[in-house]
Image (cartoon, one colour):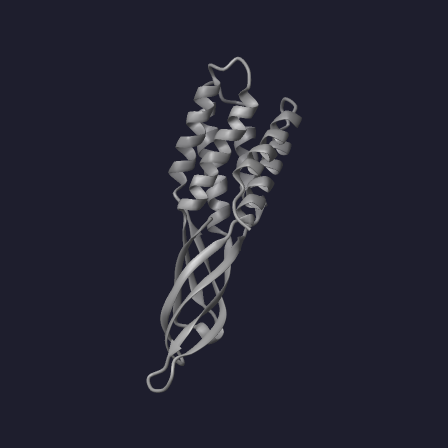
Amino acid sequence: MSLNQSKLKNDLLSIFRNMTDGDDRYFAREVSAKVADYAESGSVSTTDAGTISQGAFVGSGTGSITVDSSICENIVYAACKAMAGMVTGGDAYLAAQLASGIDSMMIAGTVNTTVKGTVTPPSGTPFTTAGAAKGTFTGVMASLQSGFLAAFNAMATMKSGGDEYLAGQMATVITAYLKAGVIATQGQANLAGSIGAGSMS
């Protein structure tokens, strides 16, 4: 599978259109869940290499990330509650906290890949092998924050179409963040000693 930006936009748009005023928990829960589902739908690819027990290894991995949406939900819900008492600065605060929620969720996630490649032993004939690797995702939270804030600011002057605009901008910003993120993995069991680096698409 791969990231489907149009689906994320439509999922977010459905959330916005079903919201009622003051429905903070719904917003936090549903947005977090849809972003988590979206991240988990992405395809992770890595280039793997290193010295394992049998010799020098070179290969590649494919897989995905698993995340916990409640991490994002709790941060976003707390932000929504805090905004109730704010007179100014609400857009900037929400942009920062929404970005923090998504980034924290992704940092805490676990990447799992299936790795295949070639082992070149110290002596003898090279042979193919396969195994598993586990790792992490690291993204740039600032890109989320600035993108969300730009969308919120633009909406301030809009008289119609705000929900669709926001859904589209958020989907674009989140997709760019995920694709630009760095995947780092370490080989497990028979591939211990191999290190992978890659990205999500």
